[in-house]
Image 1: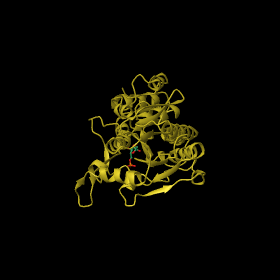
Image 2 (image 1 turned 90 degrees about the vertical axis):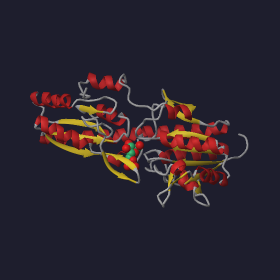
Image 3 (image 1 turned 90 degrees about the horizontal axis):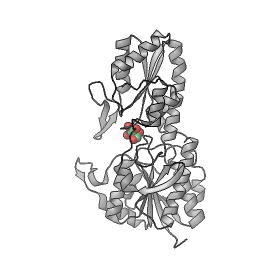
Image 4 (image 1 turned 45 degrees about the vertical axis):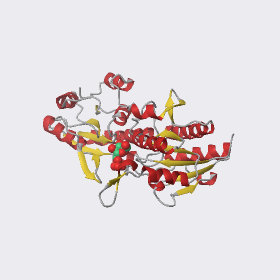
Length: 360
Ligand code: F6P
């Protein structure tokens, strides 16, 4: 269809499972259906700062083994905002024009950007400023991109957190302990809620539902009174302390890293109930490794749809998942409407129905 094209693809923001499966789908569709060239841009927009820009041709045989590979063969970064780039001398510089020039040096007709809300916002700004035909694909284990029920990486992260909870059950029961699992989710509790329901947690704490420590302790005591001396708690890293403080483990390169709420909850519970507690921080295990079947399916469907949008002359759109169909929406809408857990969410009701304590 139409003129032969050369398209670029990049992965931006934190990695997650399923990124390589997207690359595989894009290469397959672009080459098989349209006979286009595909260039993989290295390390997100950082690759476009290099001269010459860092990009590799992606052929069918390069895509062959990508379906099950974790991470991203293109590399990525969640640092270095092009509009406020931290320079080695400590200054901050707007490097957007350099990135746009790098893009045009590659002779690209369109760009597929795979990213979360932050990355998609940056890519869209670059696209508007630099006349780049951009199609976005949502990815983030946090599942907080607006207007899509699923983003790449979320399903795998939930599976991993669920498996962790399954494993914690047995050791918790053997030792009569309260096990606390801290999971990721920078501002949204989707992973904790979903894995908590799937993994049979007794308490689920998410940032969207303010909790009272006393309610959590009462749940543990009720179980103890019923002869159940172990409990499983899953807490999202973004949950605050009872005093409303966000716990950040360390600051590096000006970035904030969440961490520590699991220990805080465990310590508080052992103080008020006398229970023996242990904490597991699941961390980047949720992001690495083989994608789940759902993430492979999503990645494949998104990759094909993104290429087809370019073929139809579309731009400034993001592919999204709704009712088991791929749809597309303006990128501007997706990044405007941040997706947190709604208190009326079916899973919130399900958790309550199961007698799971949400802390409120
Ligand atoms: O946004 C994805 C995410 O995995 C968050 O859940 C987490 O808080 C953060 O990234 C961790 O970032 P980093 O890889 O920089 O430690």
